[in-house]
Image (cartoon, rainbow, N blue to C red; front, side, top):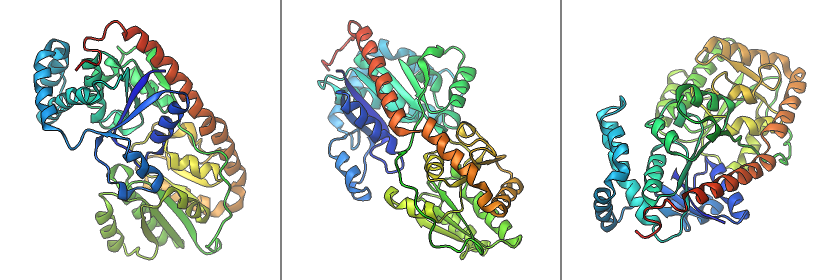
Length: 416
């Protein structure tokens, strides 16, 4: 079995459990995986299981200055191998000057990463997400003369697609989480071979027990739950403003927001300005094993993001037979079919969101068939027990063929 370097911007991450799951699946199949992370992770901020992974992860930071110096020399020595990448960064495209400078630094880090991997027998590099670590992975693979692949989710394709044209052209294959994403790639990057863009759905544990409702009088209070990082793209401010509108309409409600992030201070300020301290609660980071108790309390699980792949939180809520409400964007309608497995609203439409919440409250138990249909849909199409082995089988087959095709092309092999 081949040896694969598997890199993300930050690993392990409690909000990206699928990365660790994929690594475990590949190891189960006999693939030697070198888990890599562009950024250092504090083990004390992780649960015990994830903290153990930090000890076996290869981190690019803090950088080793001796290797950086060697990387500079190697950039010059292998310049003909990288010249098209430098041309793309410096003279092509419409990226900002700052973005170009960052790309040059990431090219340098890519050569540095190749040096870190030297002598480890790596035959393929896979980058999970299309952010800056994917450029680093692509450069390292180019220097080592091995295959490079990546997985795209949502924002890394739709909002922060920096130099994605080059990454897609250079990669041996690209996995993405929705049919919407695949069609978007083929429409916006028409020169890309369609055969190397594969839809690989994520999934959740189908064997999870359905928790009983608990803790709230449904006759007097609607409980909404939102789970996600407190980041502008998640647009929790929209949710807070919707809560004020709902209260003004006479609804008694409790909105629980589980997650942590850079928008916490501004959300706290908005909650105070709208006098919603009793109605909206910021729970902070909630460990995944504790989330089920909040799902059990919820009448409706809501998502208010401006950009997404297909969120795990919606899958989890639906497999636990909860009503979900989400924006009709990107690949979400592949999971949430409006009026059939949940409810959708036009993104940014506060009026539609509020109307949907009021409808859900008024409908009560009559929504049970929709909730049950939602669980069946997840079990059929977003079942981790089926999707994860399918990922493993495809990945092993594809990289094995890539390794064979690269066997006689490697300019440095692992000699650096």
